[in-house]
Length: 59
Image 1 (cartoon, rainbow, N blue to C red):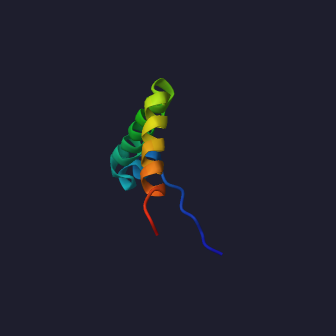
Image 2: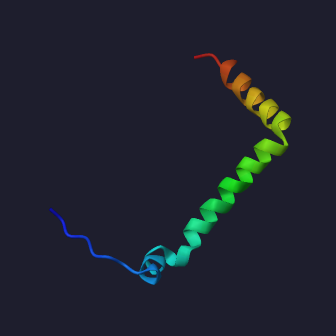
Image 3: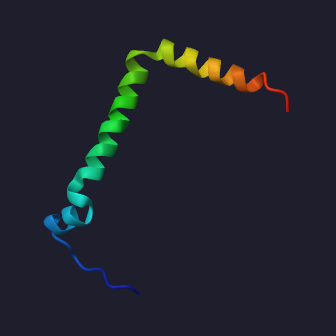
């Protein structure tokens, strides 16, 4: 069985690139969710247009 070493918050932060990746992912996810919540009609229309364009192609 492996032994795990306890790391301090600073060591974890350094391993994660200073937390930049974490905050970047959070920002992107937050942006996508707010876009969908505050403007659902436009996103549904775009999805339907994309879906219809792929459905019309012959196999």
